[in-house]
Length: 218
Image (cartoon, rainbow, N blue to C red; front, side, top):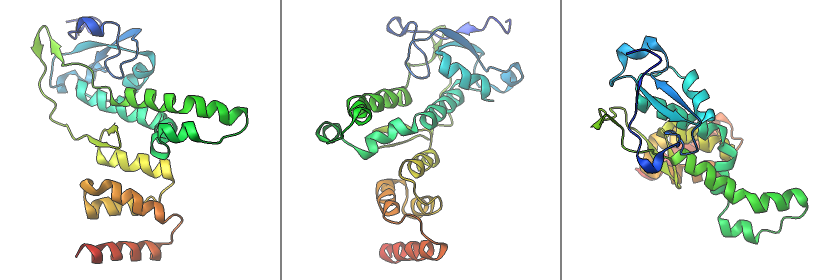
């Protein structure tokens, strides 16, 4: 097989011209693995997938072997790039935006477009594509599945969710990871709420907060 002639992934009729990674219209195709040096380590046959120009840039920069790793790389990149748009859904509800009393042209523009920006970003980040097959044969299952969903957004991992919420709410970069480690991912929302109460804390204050949480969990 020529490196310029990878087999095309099976594409359902209703997904023609659709980016596999984010669901936007595709205008190109990209080889997976992108680097020929990674082909011996791929868990599936080399393949070609449709991609939009934005996701194509991420794929070309990533050093991955499987299509699943590339999808995670793209999801992580989109989540970081559209962090501000995604944070709208964490700070507002759609009704709160409609009822807000923003004044001035800039604020009115934000009021009109903010929820649309949020939903568009969330749909791209959450896009899961279609069942992956090559010539009708399903690809080997992803052995590295470890995603984490919270508040309507799907993250590559719990660590990526922590990174996102630290940026969204300007949280203490040490406190939130420590709370999640202590309380578990099932109480992620509680860990975020606690962290939002304690901004700009000292090391001593952080130690005391964690000690109090430990005591309350005992």
